[in-house]
Amino acid sequence: MRGDLIRSILLHTLAIIACILIVFPIAWLVISSFKTMYQIFQIPPPLIFEPTLDNYRRLFFGGQLMNAFFNSLIISAITVIVSLVLAIPASYSLSRLNNAVGRNIGFWILSVRMAPSFAVIVPYFIIMYHLKLIDTIWAVAVTYLVFAIPFSTWLLKITFEELPRELEESALVDGATKAAALMRIILPNAVPMIASVSILTFVLAWNEFLMAFILTSRDARTVPVLITALSGTHKLDWPIMAAITTISMIPAFIFITFVQRYLVKGLTMGSLKS
Amino acid sequence: MREEYKLLLPAVGVLAFLVAAPTFYLFYTSLLRWFLRDPAGPIFVGVENYIRLIQSADFSTSLIVTLIFSSASVVCSLMLGLGLALLFSENVRGKRVMRTIIVLPIVLPPVVVGFTWKFLLSSEVGVIGAYFIRLIGLGNFSLLGDPQLALASVIIADIWGKTPLPFLIFLAGLAGIPPVFYESAKIDGAGGWQTFRSITLPNLKKPLVVAAILRTIDAFNSFDVIFVMTKGGPGMATHTLPMLGWKIGFYYFDVGTASAIGVILLLIVMFLSMPLIRSISR
Image: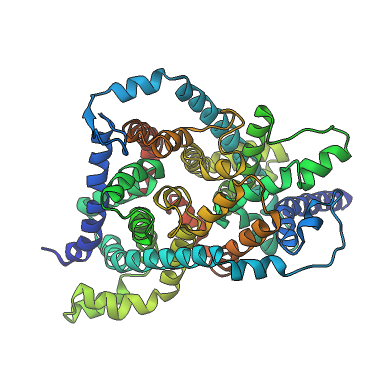
């Protein structure tokens, strides 16, 4: 029918416009990271130009980015590992604990997850200041656990709930402990879930800015802190900035390709389940 | 003790240690006059920090900026998210790939979202701020340098970065509406708008509430996107509450007043999120 055809064309046009609005800013930034300072300042922007790898070369041999990059990597890794070690048994327990204690603890864990970063960071700053831990990766990693533990615990809890109880029941009947059932039966079945939750937690830590910004100054600063520091300077080095921001998007790209399925759960903490 | 509790204990113990003590400490330090670098040390002053803060012009300006920023960003992102979700629940070719593209901004570091828009809108090098507005003859001005335009700019950047959240939530919500509902509406001869009002919207009530609460909390905490783009300026045009807290606490090192702002934010956010948390953890 003709009406249907027009409608379909309209829908496709709108969908394509939406995609362009999302892709253009990112693509423009990535393309600009291959430009020289002169090319970036050219108005109108040249559509065809000779790409250069100079910005990336300057980054890799400049030290600043490499330092921030390793800080981000180490802090995010510590955050993921420590929170997983604590969250796996806790979330399994919560998913099988069907009583008031379990619900209250769940309620408390979720409340912590929702707490505003600024309220968390003020006491942590004062404490780390007195412990002389300001500008160390440890201060940042410990603070990140405040959101990472509730996040991974709750997310794993709602994913473990999807695993049928029959799975571990026979082992439990045979006299295995809950811990043994978790290690031998649940974990092997939950590898993809745990991997997804780890990646989500990693991205959360990798992207975090406010806490790292307040707790670090030079040595321990993370990639977002470096980006902010450099974008605040008076004579902004746009090409280098474009290159740094392009590199800092890599975890997001990896994430979106592999574990998109868990994104809704991660963002809503499972509040859509009816 | 039941074995479940033993498995729960390490996480709960560590989290209690990491959360409970600092929270009490926050409430306590909000009652002190304390400049961290001042050798005089803390003096207990009761609620003086709160009174001085609430009476200060900076606080009311930041509160107004936060309210304008939050309501504009939340309302626009919800409407756009709903529109996109409706669009992508239709028969669109290549919709999986396009959906992935639309979702991308939500996983980018917010600092990068801010920088991307700063780069686009810059009056020096921006393809929009230096080229496009001149091309269409709007004249020569700085988008991030004018107070009202700067606020609009950070709002647009925030909408761009956060719309994927309501989009994903509504998409999941729409997928949950049984197709039978639509079929019977069709049989009853309902038009598009009528179907939307009497079937789609009522069935999206929960996703709407969830998305609205999550977005509001997020907007109230806004710091990174704005900080990269404008540092809260020009003047105080984009100065939100967390930014005021940052300036007081970590620029002037007045940690007492900063704690008071922390407490206020904590209470606002807890008030907003309580219904959601209660419904999830039930």
